[in-house]
Amino acid sequence: MQNVSITRYDSQAAFGPTTKLGEDCEAKRANNCQGGWNNTLRAGVAFDTRDYDPDPNSGVFVDATGQWSSKGFGSVADYLRLRWPRAVT
Image (cartoon, rainbow, N blue to C red; front, side, top):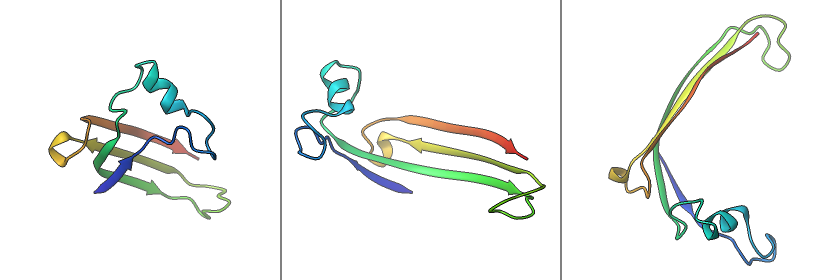
């Protein structure tokens, strides 16, 4: 489980007068611009047969992850994000 607070940082010295999120909110390209919680449930699997992780010479690495956010968890949005397996040899 992960709980993330979403906040806009427009008009703060370190970020300048506006941020990309601020621009997208003003142009109505983004939702929930008033901020809120993004509560998610995440899971993943990995298969790693590489011979030496820092500098592999043989083997395969494959992974897949999923992330589910729901208003039922107290989140401001409902979505499902999947990252399909990719193989690195």
